[in-house]
Image (cartoon, rainbow, N blue to C red; front, side, top):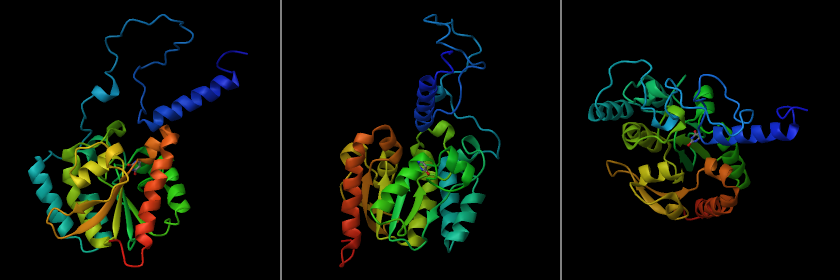
Length: 277
Ligand code: URA
């Protein structure tokens, strides 16, 4: 049996591919496949035309109108968000918005805004859409989303939640959205919160927690604590619980216990008869 046909190698290759896909690697770096096992330890000299590693490739605009500067884009986002008087109008406003560079850099198909109950008492805010979300137009529908759903279900929260992200277009290669991209999308996210009026926020992962709470600490020190989220205009204030991102939990299953503790603390507060505070 050849090495490639050996089922244990096939399973290993499949699990490695899943690992890299989770980590956001969805492109090959060489034009032609290169079998390093076949070639033994001999590493070929770098080919002049080989592309740079994914993380080092600056975002390249595929198309689209000239991009406004950040403050113009922010002002446009604020005006568009303020003009949306319900979620349906807001989704349409986001879909029409041309001021976020991610729309032209990472997204292959569409804006991804929210899924779940528009009157939910709990809002989960993740980082940004990935490939599955971009293809399906809904947040958290890939492997990480399936884990999130299982956790919400186990906590009895599956029908009491609206799920969204800090940005509404897929960042290229699933990289973390930049603070500027998050800032441009923030008026829309705040408008979702203002329209839904949840009683509390669950912030999934460091990129969400840092952006929403304006904190610098890492997620491992922020998670599991009740912190205050405030809207930019100071009109809205909500208790927010940062927690570990489900994609991180897929890579580090040993951390699931901590995320589960966070979810239980949140559920206990949500179910308190005297409200969230
Ligand atoms: N990860 C996120 O942060 N959001 C999604 O929608 C999917 C994966």
